[in-house]
Length: 315
Length: 276
Picture (cartoon, each protein chain N blue to C red):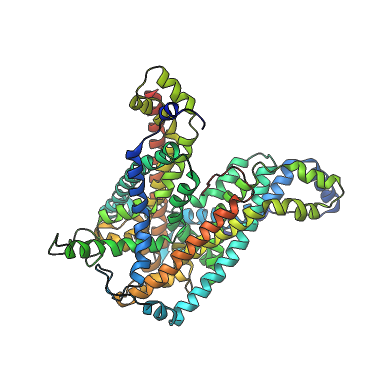
């Protein structure tokens, strides 16, 4: 409870106004003079909402990871026992590593497929670019749950692929390896996060000054060299952005592994969900969530620095 | 773009091969979305080819389900309230960051956009812990409050791009001519921003209406539509109903997105797409 009180004190001070007349007059004078004060005042509703609904819950989550579940209550004596539990159990570590590996593959596949697509819209499409961009973003706005479910329908034992292949006479028995494994998770996630890859890459490609390419051509560079020496390095900010935008949320994805992953395709989020809604060990679930987020954050920092180093190498 | 063809070719034009890839990619994006509507009219409980025959019975079956109708109404209510609340929050916030410069602005914008970068499972359990510590009961209200947090970054993004480049001299002129700040807002600012507001309302409504995981953690007795659909997925005989319902949701989402984009482009000469 103390943690919560603290969180809300924080939220309260952000929106506090004292109504002493003298103070108020001075505040008013300050407000009229200061642009920043007007800005802060306009920002205060959204700030209060985000501190109360985002920052405070996340701080509480971090605190929970240092507490202990005792029956239905929590013992708030600080301890790192939950983290020892998380890192001491091989099956947890396996699922952590598996999640990171699968998200890494999803990121590679999604960015790899999205790059030529974004390149086509940026450089190949002359008219109706706008239509292409809308077409590429519409699926992103449709229900994620239903898109994941649709892949279950496609890959299932009696699903679209198997029934089509069987009625075409290509196979006699349904293929069992399509659904309920890591492959199914990777395909479904690569589809779900397509827009996250296409848009940042497209934006960075579109921003490239075309005269740079002309200059490279005038200086005798062929099409391929031009791409590697000019276009690709200049588009890397978009690629890095896309990779981070895909890697971070997919590591914590729940719906897709739950629907199409089967036992072999379960990820961290499924483990956390079980702790919260089935077993009821919230501190342990919190420690898992914090550990996973910290691990992902460290990897992202490494990845971004490595990519920036690579860019310097190319140039 | 009025350069000679040779020069255009030089500027990285990929040629025809990539166009084939682009079309194949679009198919990959759309086939899963289009399969649900196709099977929703198929006269079979199995989602398999070849198709059996045309039927609309799955639709009438889905709409005969009272639990489904209640969760549909719940989702519509939550979505409408969340859209209005997050758009108001986003409007004030977008106005602040586009009109004024203040210290710490980057950090503040970062916090507002943070929900887009945190896995939803983490947001879900963090909010569940909060609700539990406040001794609140899980209900549509807790779902709605969670959705506001999730939808506000979308509203901020849409409205910031609309307000960016807003000519503040228009407001100053109105004030100089004797209008009060309030009337200036209604007669100058609001009409200029209105397309952004409508677009934000539509998009935040879609995000809330489609949101599953937060609702899954924050739901009480009354589920929202995605949570209801999730509970139905366990039963194979409910599958056709889910397909019918899912098709309607997909189609209405598409219509709303196109509408939102179209409204957002109104009055802007430069056509740019900005998602999240």
